Image (cartoon, rainbow, N blue to C red):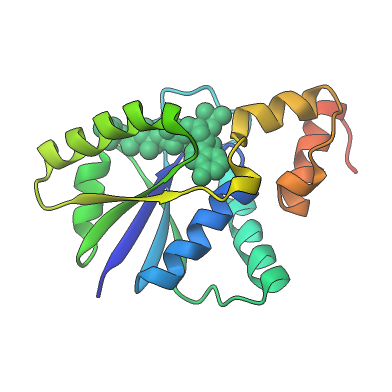
Amino acid sequence: MTTAIYPGSYDPITYGHLNITFRAASLFDKVILALAINSSKQCLFSLEERMELMKHGIAHYSKEKNISDSNIEIAQFDGLLANFVTKYEKPVIIRGLRAVTDFESEYQMALMNRYQNYQVDTVFLIASLRYSFLSSSIVKEIARHNGNYKKLVPPAVYDRLWEKFNNRTK
Ligand code: COA
């Protein structure tokens, strides 16, 4: 059984992440969305909020596209990704590549992860064209200025971003 581990900060999860997740789920026996705890990033959402939005996002995408989510799980991890993946049977790391500009840092991370744990390979999926301009930061920036981002994130993410930047519940 091969387990695909898709790591990230997911602050918040977007349709770009979900598209990669479900494509990985059709290729591997199991997919783990691994939420990094010790990211040096200053996050907008707490760990609990990000976990909740990831759960909602998976359920929503599965229902909307009529694709099973039965082999997708969420986990949190602290410390090195290369150590975390050893918990799983035949682990591979999944990363999405949106543009050539992603390649340099992804190349460095893939090699460093393999240097830490020579048994772990990284598999890259090319991001879907319709989401290839997306990042969590750009969505937050648009939300902060009340722009148009409704079709880029699941409904619960949209509502929570709206609430954060409008200081009231929707
Ligand atoms: N669709 C949409 N957005 C995507 C995407 C996709 N397919 N792939 C990446 N992104 C976005 C992310 O949301 C993120 O957006 P943001 O910077 O606006 O928040 C951005 O692209 C960068 O993504 P990424 O490089 O995945 O950063 P990350 O913080 O989400 O994840 C970790 C980085 C967690 C994978 C990495 O820091 C890690 O492994 N940490 C653990 C410690 C460790 O082992 N360090 C050594 C690594 S060699």
